Amino acid sequence: MLNKASSIVLLIALTSLVSCKRDQCVCAQDNVCVNITNSSGRVAHTVAILAQGVNPNAIGPLSPNDKACFSFRSPGENAFRVMAILSTGDTIKSAEVYSEGGYEFIGAIQEGEINIRQNTD
Image (cartoon, rainbow, N blue to C red; front, side, top):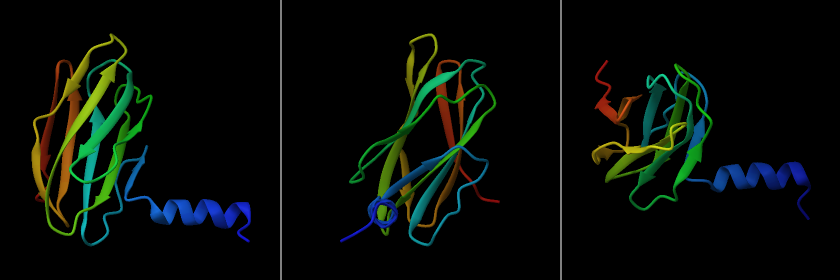
């Protein structure tokens, strides 16, 4: 029989998409990592990543200038988009972005749009 702590660790291990509020994702091999900054000047009540074949995951709230990261397993080709619901009630989405395992992206939530670019640094 699993105790509560073991059950939580097992649940985390089974989750294919991870999100957190911090500056940088720890990007494992075969994962796609997306680092997002809220540059909109407003609170983002919800920030979510929608990736093909991966259960949606969301965090929030994300205050102005706060950062968050998302990481999901993607051993092959995939695509994702980022969605945010701002304190104004506006819902904004990024364009769909092509990705493969090992790719890292940087994104900014701005007033009216979300820009995502591949991190080539």
